[in-house]
Length: 182
Image 1 (tube, helix red, strand yellow):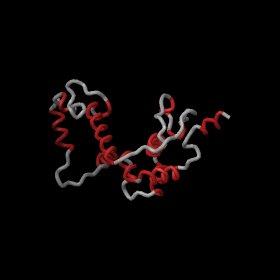
Image 2 (tube, one colour):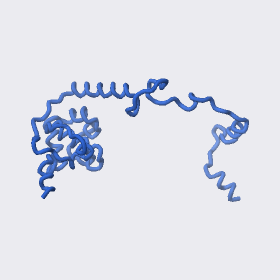
Image 3 (cartoon, helix red, strand yellow):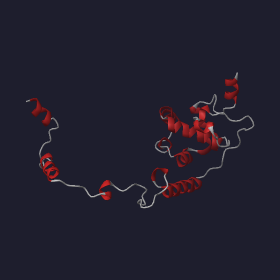
Image 4 (cartoon, helix red, strand yellow):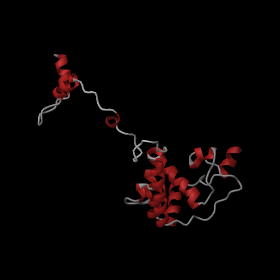
């Protein structure tokens, strides 16, 4: 009986992926969906059938679309705590919350949102970590060659000369194996 209550509080229960897409595409269109979700199935030759096919195969994209449906189209408050860790289809909406009117979205708002996300990414460096002192502005650590000069030995230089084939020479990847077998 507890499962029935949980499913009654889940707005995605009983809604197929195709019906979900039809609803949001009819309301927003493919262009807005691509602008907000950045999923190529909404940009390159978009259709309901091709989008459903892609979303069924790709878990991260389907969860992104389902979350968009819940929080933008149905205007539900964002999930918190344990519910946020679950995929959108498994989330339970508290009984006192009910779906509202779809959010008003525009391409200009999507562009501003992307610009803000780009600023945050630049501020925290690549990978979402805060920048450390002495780290390059790209957010990436310095290459190994920039950190310490290489220690060249005479043996390493002679090995490099013999390992490199002459220009235009054919490379045989099995040459060493053949010599060992002989």
